[in-house]
Image 1: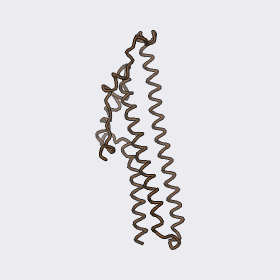
Image 2 (image 1 turned 120 degrees about the vertical axis):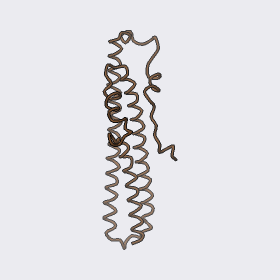
Image 3 (image 1 turned 45 degrees about the vertical axis):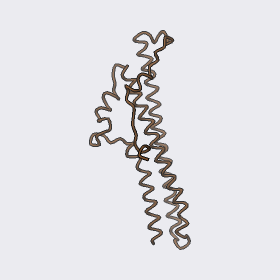
Length: 180
């Protein structure tokens, strides 16, 4: 289980050998230094846009699950108003469904985090061939590469625990309802 909770990321040095096309069939315009630089810059722009889209999809995933949880909490509040009409143990099935939903949310966020981590390593490898490296050599290192929470605490590390919090609240609510 620890293997599934831990995340690791490759370094640009691990990625670079597979990133660059070494074939002789590279476009003739790309063989000149300025042509090659232009091609790399265009690929860099496209790739950064793709990484940004993954982040946007992660945001939509969060919005979906937060909306779903808000709907469920509202429905539970409305139904629980008349507690005598519902046997507490009938809530075990919805609780199991909610916990599964929270687990799915957790793993989706983790997958987005891993995907974006890999994408930004590739961005770093691409930046090694550009005149400047604003993300990899400047911003990411200025933030301590996400290792020092006093400098930067990555949002993906924090947001992944939101579904865990919801799951804990659901279990606590069920226990309180069962004991009441």
